[in-house]
Image 1 (spheres, rainbow, N blue to C red):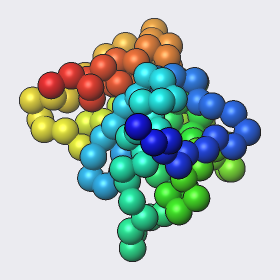
Image 2 (tube, rainbow, N blue to C red):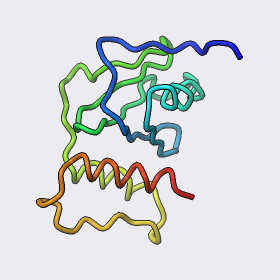
Image 3 (cartoon, rainbow, N blue to C red):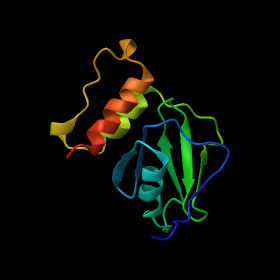
Length: 121
């Protein structure tokens, strides 16, 4: 099988990662899986950058035209609430993530739970 055109600039994200592109939520547990997901998103007349969040809450950008993944250049950190809102705004009402006791959950727990929900059938 041939190599896919995919590069990482500066550093890799901490996994899992969660994101949204082309009307689809996605999640990956490792870089190779993330690369396979991201390269299928083709440059379109819409956004050229796919934004995602890693397990530490840091935003990462995938530039579709250059096929490069890098930390977001605005140093944006996502909150637990933003991650939950991303998920809940793109799923049916029967799959809503209930945000109870967020103060007692670590960000990694929230990202992992949302990642598992995205990957489950």
